[in-house]
Image (tube, rainbow, N blue to C red; front, side):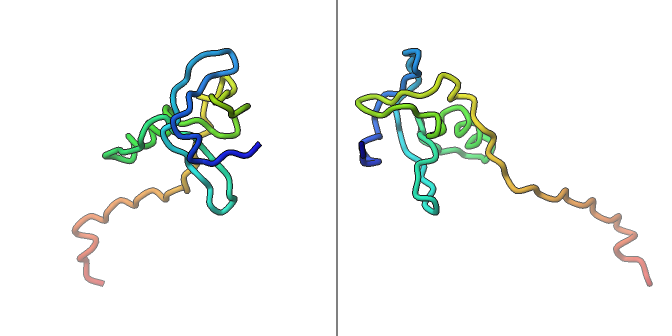
Length: 106
């Protein structure tokens, strides 16, 4: 069965044990792979990166946990336990040199 991505928006999401999870607000795509990555249940309009990460973790579902899509979406019951989104490691900022060190005469 094929379905348009636009038809997923607004569908109810339930676990396979009939627990209501939410309603699809948006779909996140991986354009390089050409596949759906996540379903969001809330807009990700955040003022800070931390707030966006919290919404992303709590209000999205990995598409690989989707079991069926018809008039509703069925997901595995542990779909709210998200895989951590790995960010590239950032080097620790170095401590600034003391004033006297920067302007010492060589």
